[in-house]
Length: 189
Image 1 (tube, rainbow, N blue to C red):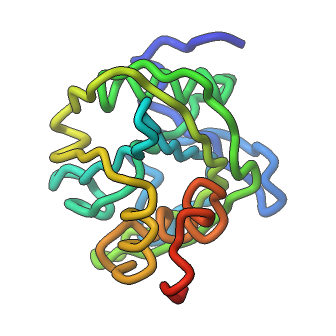
Image 2: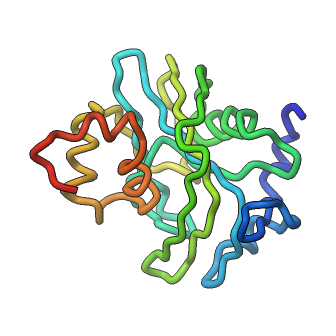
C-alpha cells in the first residue's frame, strides 16, 4: 500500500483477535496499560558492514521498560501500512537511519510480558533483520543510548543476564538465527 504519512502512523495500532486477524484499530496512547489488547507490532535487528548488531537503551520517558537495553528498534504498523514500510519509517524516526535488506526472520513471533510498573505488552510481533551503513542519530524521546556490539557478545550477555534486557529481545534471541548461532556452547540457556 505504500508509505503512510507519519502523523497518521503514530496515532493508531491494529488490534487483533486471538488468531491474529485484524479486528479494528485503537489510539496508540490508549493501548498499552495493565490490560493491553492483542495488537500488531514488529521488531527489527540491525547489522552493520562489520557484522555487528545494534542495541539501544530505551529512553527513560518510555511508558514500558524505560531505560532497558533492547534490539535496534520496535514499532507498530499503521492500519493499511505494509510491515517493510513500517520498519523503514521507524528506523528513520527512531534512529535517523536508512535500512536495507529488510528480511523477516521470525514471522510468527508473539509474546506477552508485564513490566515492573504493570504495563503489559501483548503483541503479534514479526521480527526483521536489516542492514545499514548509517551511524545512528537517535531520537532522544525514544533512545537514550546505543551501541554496536559483536553478535557473540550480545548472545552471551542475553544468556547470562537476561534481566538486563527487554523481555522480547530475550525471547527473540532464543529463536533468531542471528543470535542462536552466535551463542557459545558453554553458555546455558
